[in-house]
Image 1 (cartoon, rainbow, N blue to C red):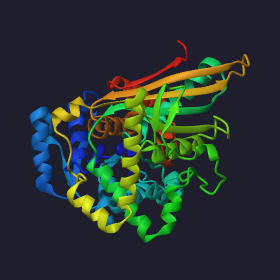
Image 2: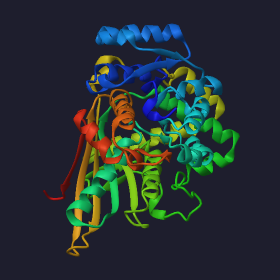
Image 3: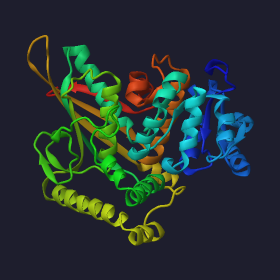
Image 4: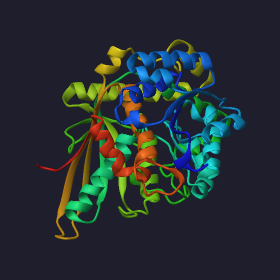
Length: 420
């Protein structure tokens, strides 16, 4: 079946989970989605019916939403599912545990796909296993369509496009400073980190993948640039005017940006450099915050690599998958990412400095992420995207069309000349 003749435009897979419900609620409230033929899917019909009743209380027409049942471990049921739709939008993680068969089914069928994964080791496996098949079938497999890594990936694309249009050429480097932000820890994200640590313990090669700045490049074996090493220490940034430290998602986001650059054909030059850190503010309070957060992150990752400590943290401290903040807490959340880029104009030979901003209201890992994933699915379904199939990224697939969608959805994507 061709994409144009599919029964549905979008299927939300995992609609009974915490984030899956938020994606479904966003679609139910979104006017653009009202022209979409969409359905809810999961493995438990009764829970799907409960979700549908909740959606109908928001938008009465949702009472007629189709409900589809399949199993993440049953390839035949997933084959039947994905051939009925143009796009599968999935929130079912950890993806390394539950996502293999769904990606394979979409690659076989030529069905577009988007997810929220930040699991670098799993994405590497999906690239190796399915990129060429997806290219042949036309399936656009787009990972990292949430807080990781849309602000980073589309933020860099936005900066580079501004440079190209206004000055010609490209930026030689872009640095992202994440923060301020407010939001709770995502149970799904924590489960993905735990999954990665379990894989590291079982297979030392996984550690090498996670530590490789080029892990998601078409050829991850190419020489590494020391300037691309992940930031692991507290530093004072003169250009940002604040104390900085490691950002927990940088080890995902930077690799996604580099894959985008490679898939786009290296338009920003083979020596383009991208890094990102978290910003913690100024003065003694900023230093104290940066120091405590850096120490806490380091301690948490060390503890997660020790099986007894990992089990203890899972049982007593860390949020479980399916758990999340209340509506009020989600609404109070927000994030601001600031980008600084430098390049030389080939027209004038003068140095160009740009500053960018990507921001959103709503808890980054839940409210903002649900918006980003839902709009990614709608973009794949309805936007004229001249992209062939493959295991792609938001910037290399939906690109500026998704930037415009997210702007209309209330997110901030802006660029200024530094000093303006």
